[in-house]
Each structure stands twice: as C-alpha cells, then as structure tokens.
Amino acid sequence: MPLWTCETCGAQFPDSKRPPATCPICEDERQYVNWKGQAFFTGEALAERHRLVLRDDLGLTGLALEPSFAIGQRALLVPLVEGCVMWDCVPLATPAAIAHVRSLGGLKAIAISHPHYYGALADWSEAFGGVPVYLHEDDRQWVTRQHSSVVHWAGDHHRISDDVTLLRTGGHFAGATMLHHARGADGKGALLTGDIAQVTMDRRFVSFMYSYPNYMPLNAAAVRRIAAAVEPLAFDRIYGAWWGRNVASGAKAAFAASVARYIAAIA
Image (cartoon, rainbow, N blue to C red; front, side, top):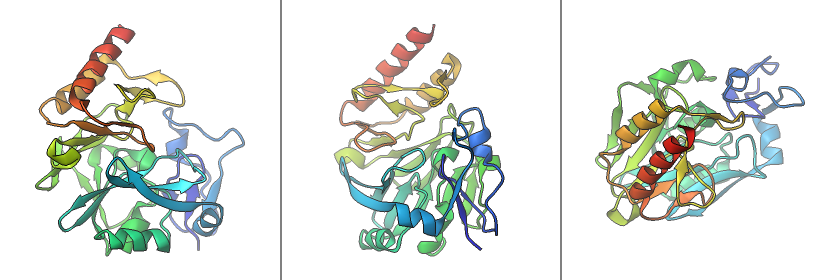
C-alpha cells in the first residue's frame, strides 16, 4: 500500500489503500486547504512530477523539489565530523539524492523547525539506518506519520553535538525550533531559523508571523520571547527557509533591529 503526501503542506501519511480524508496540518488556521480541495500524492506519483536538486546555498548544501512543491522550502545539511545534520525536511527522498548525501558523509540526525516542514522525515531517517529525528514534544500532536526514529525532546535546549544546539523559541508553533551552529559562518556562528524568523526579501531583516498564508501576525510577547531565547547566542549569519533567503553577515545586529522594528510596527 502506498504512502501519501499532502499536496499543500508536504506532510507524509501512513500507507493505506486510500488517501486520508483530511490533513490536520492544512485544516489548522495557520495553513489552508487547497482551493480545489484536499489532494494527496503517492511517493511514486510525486517522484514522476518532481525531482530533488542539491546545490550550495551560502556555504551549506541545500535540497529542494523542482518544480516547487507544497510550501517550497529547502532542507540544509549542516556538516559535522561524523556526518551531517539535516535541518528541516522535504517531502521526497530519491535514490540519487540519498547517494549524494552519503557522499557528503551521510546523516547523523534530522532536526525540524516545525510541523509545516516534517515532510518525508521517516523516509530520510530509514535511508540512513534510522537516525534520530528531533521534534519538540510541544508539537507532538502534529506528527502525521509516527515513526520509531522520532525523538520528542523537551525543554528549551537540546544539544546534538559540541557545536550544534536546538533552541525552542516558540512563536509560529508552541514547539517552534531554531538550530544554532556555533562553528558555522567561518566560526562566527550561524542561526538556522526556517520561517520561525523569516528572512525578508531585502535580506537585511527578519520578521515574524503566526500564519504566513493567512496574514496573522505574531504578538509582541511571543516575539520578545523569541528574542530572549536568541540573545545569548553568537551568530553572524542567518539561514532562512528558501533558496537565498539568508542574512549573510551582521545577522545578530540585524535580528535585534528586526525585533525592535516589528514590535514598533504592531504597537
């Protein structure tokens, strides 16, 4: 029986003869159901329509589907001595992409910022021997395909290695997470934010939303909590959720300025 992938958000669902009746992630107020109605693809159908591309994005290898699918995010590979951490996930895992990741040292772990990017997390984990997939326990209810590799971590910090730490900031989701790579950006530190802090089009600031497609802003208290969680970290670069949506340098000052600008705008 096939696995099913939601066309609108890219979440993968368990194998069954028929697709799910609904996608709870899309029915949540932060997302939306496709205007033509809920639709799901099998993995085979998805692979026929799309391919996975891997290319450099400001010093990190990124993966994304072309043509763009679902939310259109790209995953990033954070290199460690013993393998890579895949940050966020994509809805497809192809043999060619898996082989390329193996050539880069394989995967040590997968960590995902929030439920909109869960994608084919189980497929990627299985391809590398069941590596752990770190999801914050506050978002446990949103996992659409349960898998033994999922680790629901608790609290505000979880260390994956000496230089990679997960940081629960909240905001977009209760368990919304960022990844801090202490040795990133040539040793100056990098912060991988997904769209928990979305890099703006001018790539000089970040911004914050409770729902992007439904234009629901995040409240000031939530933004201040995010700022407080990030403030102790050293970082010079921010990687956002899509190709090229990065703050290349001076990112910590840009983050602080963004918080002040945002709160002033909604006051």
